[in-house]
Length: 207
View 1 (cartoon, rainbow, N blue to C red):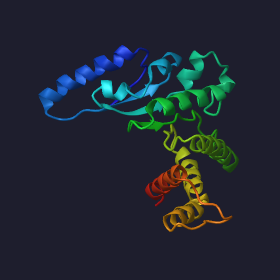
View 2 (view 1 turned 90 degrees about the vertical axis):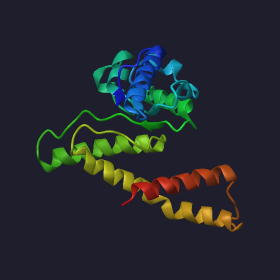
View 3 (view 1 turned 180 degrees about the vertical axis):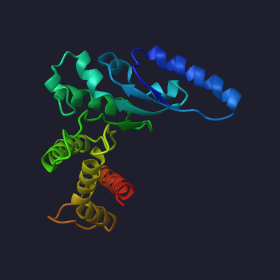
């Protein structure tokens, strides 16, 4: 279940308390996802938040339109690749790093103006730009508001993961075999962990 408009940390605690009562009655484990769509939400996001909620927080979704509107940005700047949105997503990444809480980016509120190829392709190009921006910033999931977005999302996600898949795999293999992957340089363990994680994401995303 999702929890929108989280304006105070107390809201989350109260909601977790309700879930705990329901769990006792139903005999099941309940988890929820929250939306980060207000500037006042960012200050109370922190690594120990999920622990205080009994581990019930499963995911956090960025809400671009409410967030940018609350900041007073003009309509043409209410976009996922605005620097203000980058800041919000980076705060989310920092707060939830290592907690197991999954992160999801916001959406593009647009659909093709018509069925003409030019309109459809124009929307795909814009959506693909936003998906690439999210992927470069470490947000590997997002949600879409129109079926036409699925085409540009799948194509962009596949291209992103495939572009460096072979080179990443070679670098991991070289490290495991204690040899150079090229250029006479071996990667550090932290880099190898990042490369291995990228390979796992690619394997999960690719058909």
